[in-house]
Length: 125
Image (cartoon, one colour):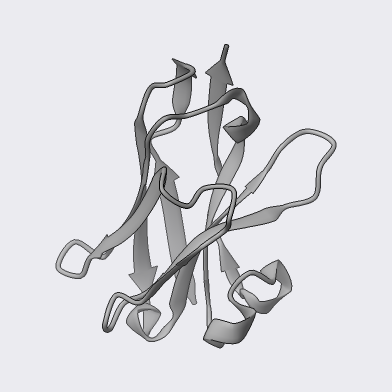
């Protein structure tokens, strides 16, 4: 089992920044791919970014490229999502996920076995 706990959400104005954190624990969590997803009201859950514990290889959704950065601190068992230049369209509940997911499928939420509880991000114009 892997446990994931997100934090760092909040309400900000457009153009501001936020940093989300996801602390992982449990057996063999470091073997899994980590990812951030988000879900806005009335929308399906969508992928945001992914990273591997080993090597730190990343991928991003086109909608956040150049604005968001995913990173990890192995010693702290934590994955971060630095979000800059936030826009109202970024408003959503953000979820951290872990799974034995190939890179080619990183954006498929069904490929992740473990999920955090989510943290709300609200961006006002």
